[in-house]
Amino acid sequence: MTPTDIEHAVERYLAKPYPIVLIPDDGEWIVAIPDLRGCISQGATVAEAMEMIRDAQRAWLTVSLQNGAHIPEPSAPATIWTMHRPASVREAHASVAG
Image (cartoon, rainbow, N blue to C red):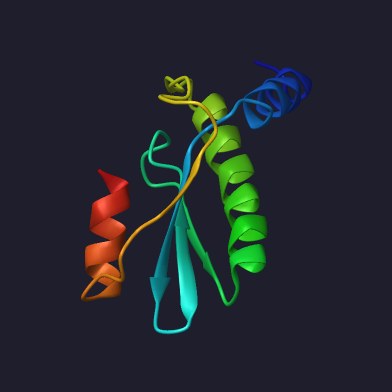
């Protein structure tokens, strides 16, 4: 794929309704897109976390397309789930990373 093809493909995937998981953690938020294994970020507020996950999603998609990796379709309609506070950040990452 050319860089232009990748850019167009990333935009198409960004428009898809991937579910998002938010996990509170000591006053901050961990956020992930479980369908995109390893696509995780965090923010001080929910709004910041949502902004950061979009940046992470764009980077995840770009690298995956550059490497010719399979990109899964959304597993469910666009939903934002808030989970319980995990015992640790490591547990939170493990719960959303698959």
